[in-house]
Length: 169
Image 1 (spheres, rainbow, N blue to C red):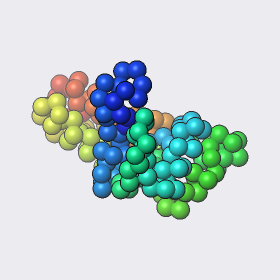
Image 2 (image 1 turned 45 degrees about the vertical axis):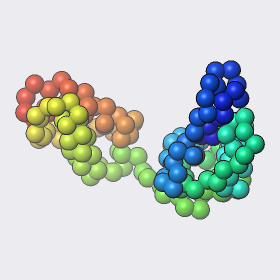
Image 3 (image 1 turned 120 degrees about the vertical axis):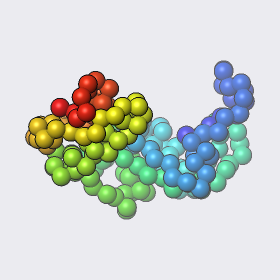
């Protein structure tokens, strides 16, 4: 996140921009924020409070100009009660929360996402598959997807690679 300066630790042979700096005026997506260890939570909170950061090994602070977007599959309020997640960090970004139900609760999205991933991997792998059989769509819509969208994406990626016909069966 922070980057580092040359010589700040063994192996730091050159200056390195971190994600905060590289994001510039864009958006930085921090996935699985609930997994962040307490010490890094403290560091991130400081950045969010001051909107400034320093590379590791540097005293010069730089402005944080990127928009930060966080995601987690954890119930952070429970984590706060367990004292494994800092409440002050949570309340720093929780004012703009979007709750996205699991894929199994959004059956209508499965077919749309499956077609999106089909296009993505068909292009990436240079395959000429042009859709799904009705049976495949039915099977996808009946599955609970405990791994959510990532699991669906993995299935479609594999199917595009392995399918020998024009439609994924």
